[in-house]
Image 1: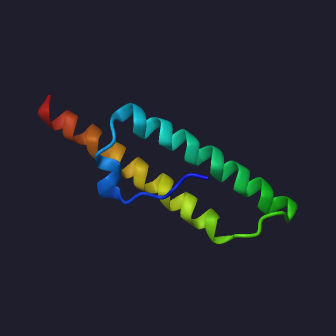
Image 2: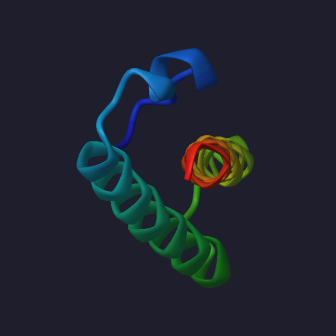
Length: 72
């Protein structure tokens, strides 16, 4: 299970760490969706938290990319 971080904590991660965390969270979301479909999911709020985590990571990644383009 991936522990949720705040956006400011995600900004401290390197690009590789951020991509690894994104892949892990997407895999977790896939597993949670599968559990929900089969009726085995006990904590339904974890689905919502995983989606938010992915959104935070994508936001930080987008911010970094836009900052790099402004510098270029």
